[in-house]
Image (cartoon, rainbow, N blue to C red; front, side, top):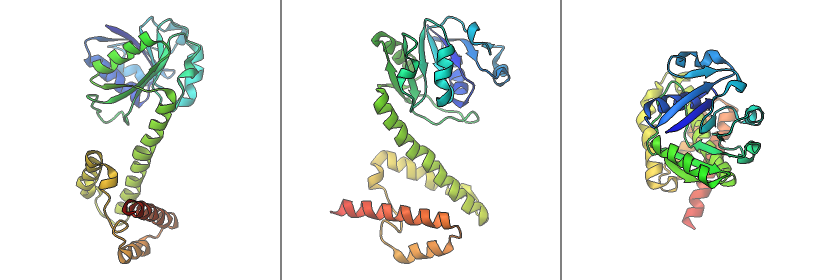
Length: 254
């Protein structure tokens, strides 16, 4: 049985709380948030608090807050269990004021209003003490995830790549959605295309799945698209991405 205190009330903390409630070998001893109203909904099933000095004894303290706030909250915590943060780009050493510390980083995007499957979810794990790694590994497995031993340097690179794939990718979808709305085209018509694009990239590798006018050097279509774009910023982005695709295609042919 793993006893856990959850710190934070954001998207990730919300999903952890739900997953822990479904896992018989995990006990959520307490949930802390400086804004207790955000976690009030859970008070019938878990002890909630907004007082750091009142944190209960536990095996593991999961800090799920914004990156910049981690050092401050770490310095306020005085516990004997393992203290870990769940951030992708924050070094493990920010928790070094605790003898037992580490990282429990799930490689996924989380939104409170959308259910996330934890089965086979990659967890990037790191610990200052080797025996504590076994605890983090056990928790990842209990949640149905896949544990990976990753140091802070490699984890930051993983986070960078995740930002390019997820955050930038989502921004491109947002731009597409705005173009759709502006032209009275329902965005959901692109759903199958979006799904196939990402699934194919994972299955085959994105270097093997690029298609479109930039890939085939269809200048007539490229010029037509550019003439249709009213925004200077969007035109520049279209040109930059077209150039990037064409350069990689040329390198591939050498």
